[in-house]
Image (cartoon, each protein chain N blue to C red):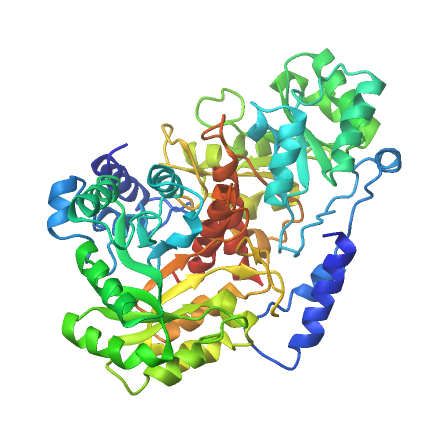
Length: 303
Length: 303
């Protein structure tokens, strides 16, 4: 079914349903006006994936949904795209295994063209670790090549000054990612915030909620306190709220997603809600699908 | 991880979290006391699957979740059980392709033993079509053999008197299933209710919400009006609220599940919420998982 057909069907439903009431969503008209991506590779590459919220989901959700690229660590481009199409999520944070950092223009064009042809919007690159000044340069050059304005990254402390300089030069934002108790640099979002709060406002956080809770973070407080610098989210669930917590399908673990989405709304979060699924990584599709479904279901609390 | 380990973990979490607040579910303690099924085949067969709400989900949901057996029409017992385990849903309405109606005791014991060993509760049989008196007899004999007290069935109009007689004889309930505009007997739940409302109270409805909406049913009104006779639900989503509506992942279609769960709660529904997924039937697991996830997510509206 084409996007246009979908629009027609939804419009038709709404006209039909105005005189009847049986649980038919009123969101359908909104969906009919949803932004759609250009589907032709070359055209898309002219303005590659720079829109902040270009979700082309059949129905709008209160927050745009994405996938954190690491979810597909064991899959090539083709299979990753197929999984995204299956779950109907159109926004991806690109990892280097799908497009190496040192790719030439031809490779960039080929990979970005494949995403564009599938209607997938690359909204960020990362997570990218930056242990040297050269790595910072590479990350920003990569973001520029790909055509995104957001890097999810992990610069060493002594590279934060240089990273800020690159942010100012390029107007590319950086969202620093927290990785739990094992992370010597940024176990929780507080360790990020302390290091960027007085810097260029284009420096912020990618809050990984699972790693944050494993590190003892109060998510509600963090979302409130860091809201002006909260640029990306890695959404996941964990088995226990402690260092040993393991990845699990969203909704089966200990994180209260109803409270999470309420806090995001309350603090006017305007970034992406990207699912990062790290269980069953050689066969992740059912778990990704369940997680996406659960998060979408919880978001009905807001509509 | 064993059930006991899960209990310990959840208890541990709760003890730990009482002094901290970061979005950890308070439902975890409730989950720690969730009913678990006997896992040894023979023991389970002594009291085969007669508990109305024996969900062994890691976390309790406001309504117990199940699967309508037709979902697995293209899969054998082993693969169906594997899919149920993967999605963590433990209640199934049994279809004849997993256990033929004319099965001997040995076959019944073998199949029911396999379900019990996997922790799966057969809470009903059906959908079973009954076009002759013999078919009614077979259906009730089958339910008795399997050890369930609920048949989801479709008796011809001229067999409803005889079906009522069997209900009285056996104390086995029947929930008559509606199948949409193409169904000459029961397109919507109204056509069921009219024929059972003055009969034995053990005669009721299995409301198939997708087929009902395709037939023009107002779900909220139906749930309210038929609540005293609502014994089972087939939960699904559809692309459009018309005869041509097709099956789609729950949350992607036109049914408002937030309104649905609120109506069920308001009218004190006490049966199973069984997902029936009829799209991608040769590769249904991602769609089932997304549907289950979405429905669980929506149910957080009630908690």
